[in-house]
Image (cartoon, rainbow, N blue to C red; front, top):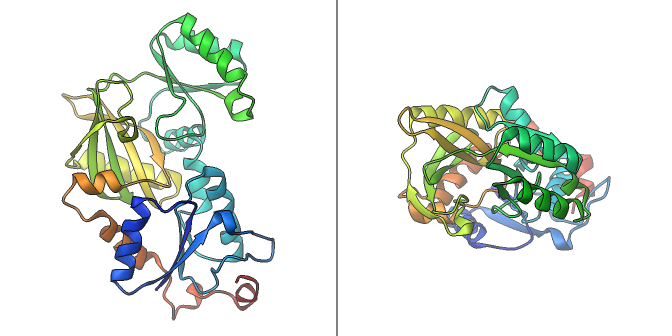
Length: 302
């Protein structure tokens, strides 16, 4: 199998995957998107012989456009551009989860500071203001008062980018000091961990402490439903416990370029090996016409 790896920086996660792929004798074509260009008829990236391309781009914009072009060329890519487009935007993710009946925090979107302030007041304090695009818990704010809301909204309104003019307001969920991250392949949980902190943000990137988490039947069902809602793929599904006694959960985020190095060090599961198992099953059969690169495409992709 020949695997293409879209990247802009080789992190620990990518090193783990590359090691497992090479251990099994698979060829790897590393594609630095900073040095690639994508035209309507082809790309200078060496993807013509790839059975599958895995998107591990650090920047959301590069991920979205590169996968769109590869899909246009007929090159199999995971995650798909459709999945990436939903997961990269928190508002789209919320809509997809709600449409699929997956429990998710109450959410409203406004487009002016005045209307956003009204929404926040209706939610009551505390509530949460998030950027529609972003990761690692950056630019998220827990709002405890009207004064804080006014200041944060003013700051966002002056940041300039249009995405900051989309005010994504969400209820504050009183989780028990932790949330749950589940890594899944097409809805099948690979491994899971809790992320705990005294801070309201429990992301591992924010210093949250991690522990292995045993996936219950309810969590498995939610992960499967959330994955299907956004289009499937290699995903990180984030859940919060809304009731410790009843074991009820809400899904608040689905990540399409999920990091797993912390999870791999937390669980006994060999996470990169399991991901490679999935990639091997996902790659089109080289003898199957549906998995071959069309002749016209093989002429235009380097």
